[in-house]
Amino acid sequence: MVKVIDNWEVADVGSVAVVASDRARYARITLKHDGSITLTVPRRVSLRQARKFLESRISWIQRHQHRFREMEKLPAIDRTEARRILTNRVAELARAHGFEYNKVFVKNQKTLWGSCSARNNINLNVNLLRLPDDLRDYVILHELVHTRHKSHSRAFWDAMNRILGDGKHFQRKLRRYKLGL
View 1 (tube, rainbow, N blue to C red):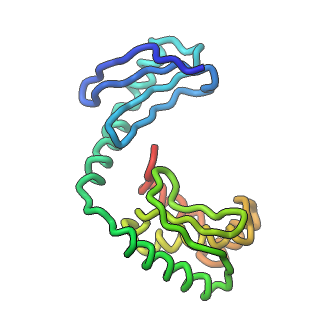
View 2 (tube, helix red, strand yellow):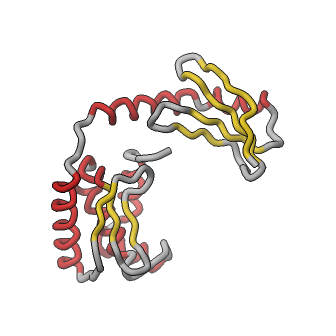
């Protein structure tokens, strides 16, 4: 069960809803694009501990609020154009590396850059067009490798490394462009 237990006004950040959850194992902060901030804590955490955790994360919250404001300034992406560009790139990379896939879908997702279904359908985020080319290719290759290796097993990363050299390097680099929080 989740219950809103307080609402704090925090200087330089704004309003923060404090939620206690029976299922939460750790404290976490969620920022949404609408500007809302939620601090979710396990029931056993006191309000004093929750406040201390929140205060330790003020700079993190501000950094992500700034990122959201910057994203709002970016022009809208034409979904038809994004579908054309991304679908063509998937075909090029699949051909170059010997991958087979079923269909490509381009979506406006909040938290995922891409995914690969059990039927080898590739789902890509329209916002990939905002990434540098090397990271866009990394995401596409990541999903193409999932057509052969469905989990992030050692075999998956070995395949990624054969193509990219150091796949984890690109994974770390991509985290700087995280979509959702």
